[in-house]
Structure formats: C-alpha cells, structure tokens
Length: 313
Image 1 (cartoon, rainbow, N blue to C red):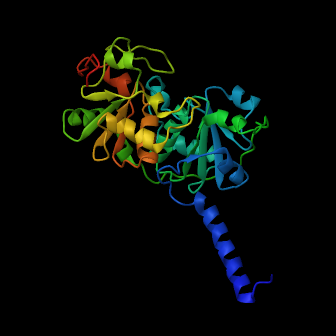
Image 2 (tube, rainbow, N blue to C red; image 1 turned 45 degrees about the vertical axis):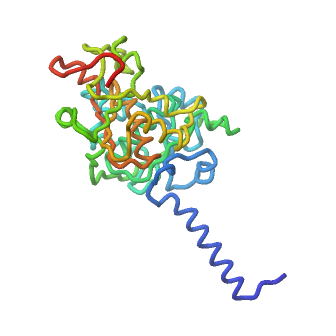
Image 3 (cartoon, helix red, strand yellow; image 1 turned 180 degrees about the vertical axis):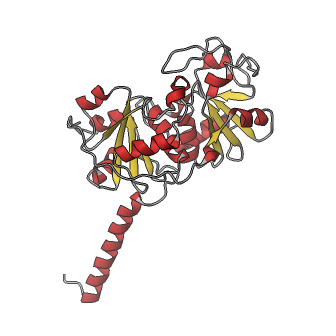
C-alpha cells in the first residue's frame, strides 16, 4: 500500500525527530536512574566521538589484558587523588583533573562512561569527582567490568589511541563536599542524616578503621556521633549491579534517611562514601547530599574530635 505524499512526509519527519531524540540522550542532563547504563547502551554509542569510556583500576596490566573497545585507562589512585594527600585519598585539585581529561581526549560536552572491577566503588568515586568539578554528562556501567563478558561481549587488547583535547573546569560544585569545620557545626542538629558506609565492626569500634588502599589503622575506633551505619555494599546485588530504586529507597528510609534531610556520607577515606552519594543523588534524586572527603582518616586521627562506640548513632 502506497502512502499519500503528505503522509510519507509526515512519516519521514517523525522518524527523523525520533532519531534526534534518541541521539540527544547523550546531550540531555543526567536524571535519576539515567546515570546507569547497560552494555546495550554502550554498544549503540561505542563509536561516537561524543562518548568516552574510562576503565578505572589499580594496574594498567589488567587493562592491557583486555578492556571494552575504545576504553581508556585511569589509575584509581595516582590519577584522581591529591598527590600530597594520597594516604587519605582526598580529591585531586582542579588543574590535575583538567590535565587528566585533556590527556584522555575529553571535552566539556563529552559523555563519560565509567567502569571498574571493584564493585563500582571507584566508578562512583570518579563520578562524584567529575560532578564536583562541574562535568554534566556522566554514566556508570551497571555491573562494572564483568557486565561486558556477561553480556556475551569480548574484550580487546589494543590500547586506545587518543587525541588530546582542550578541557576547562569552569565551576566547582562545593555543595557536594563538606569539610571538617562544617561537619562539626552540623552535629546534633535536626534534619541531618550522617551515614557511615563502613563495615559494622569498624562502625562499632570492635575493629579499627583502616584506609582501604594503605591498610593503615586509625588512632581511634568507633564512629562520628549521630551517624547511622549503612554498609556501602548494601547498595548492590550479588552480581554487582545496583539494587532497584524501590529497594534502595526503602533501605535508606528504614534508617531514617529521608529526602527532606541534609545527608552527609563518610567512610574511612571518602572512597566508600561515594556509592552512597551516587545512589542518593543520581538514582533516588535526593538533592542535599555531601561527601565528607577526608572521612575517618581525618576524624579518627584527631584526638580532640569525639567518637562513639557501639551500635547506636
């Protein structure tokens, strides 16, 4: 059956609009739940110059053994932490992140896709870092590195050739981070939820807290007064994918963490607080969530700061 000319024109126009909308997915601001992507999403955009895939890891040898086609490697400590404070894993200064993104061929409007084989903790940390420095288009591969072969796809061994690009950080979104002085001023105030993302034994003080990548134990045991304990891994299913928004929402609400609260997340060094921030901000749409970047690496090593032991806030 032949369409009348005006119907054919309308059909072509609607098809074109649909295609533009589909491609505009890269350009639209990230909204809750859209910050996660799957293998199919990556496959549809893997050759796009507007998309940059980053593998984060502790050793480039793993990357060279196999990675997602087109992915570039980022060292999870050396590339994204303050060189003078790596022991506490604090965020790198803006000029360092600028230089990294230039080297990776990223521009300000590039959509950055992150993955790792550390249960997405480093991807969440990098996501927070990029958002802190104002980058808008960021995604995490749900399920991490293992999602690619699980979906039947093969890794490649060729190192991705990258043409450096100009990148400029134009703003720092300080609302995503809280410092020691600000946190102390918030203790005991109504409408504040403080989340300790560490294992329960570290929260209670049965075991000392330790910085993840150095293993150094803190001077004091226990948690920041008023903090509730929500283990960072509780945000994930056994296969490494994030739990559903309904499950996550219920989990946080069960701990008294509601949308009306100002939420502060911490751990031992800011790394494991990042998945908490990511879930609340990007998947559940909370709008007042901060990371205490220095976390217990600072708090528990200052004898003048209070700590509480036991399983109560």
